[in-house]
Image (cartoon, rainbow, N blue to C red):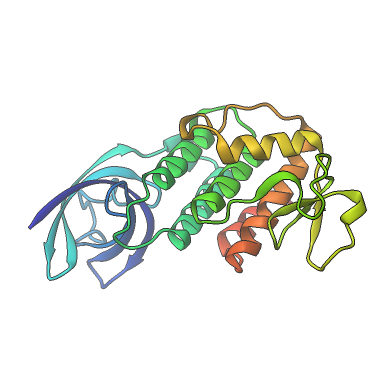
Length: 246
């Protein structure tokens, strides 16, 4: 049986001397593992559409639950991103995180759209890397089932909270700050407004907000801490990206 999909490549792994295994994210079939025969051969026609972070159209042959690429064509390679090591490493982090939170054969079209939009922003738009990173982390957390509670202090309902509990994903005010354990990070009104927007806006407009430099730094640190805490893991690609900023 043949299946035609549009997918983005999340990971490429050697299978043998000639072939490779790709992890791809599709719109309607979730995450799939597919074999790319001959990909490691010189001048293989699959090299461009099957490289990491490439978005393309793939015709797959399915046999006994295993998929093999029969034909592939590139739709978007994000070429400007590939000429900047820092941006490329950030995009690779997005791909690794997407692979972790996506599931086999379960559609998640909004996650694919989020990844594509963030890669496009890194590649074509003049958006700060820290803003794109914060948007991806917080929106991806929501899509993974970790929607934070961003409306008033979790303990008393105070509408002027100044701390965000990373572990519980909720807000606290000054009077309730000492209740319970967990790691808390400061939030300002501007950061809170940006977080609410990222979590609840239309998918296509997720990057369409303004934020000052000082609030952006707070936001980026907070979303990273929240995302990794909820997933209970770190990312080697994130560590590498951060090493390039030193």
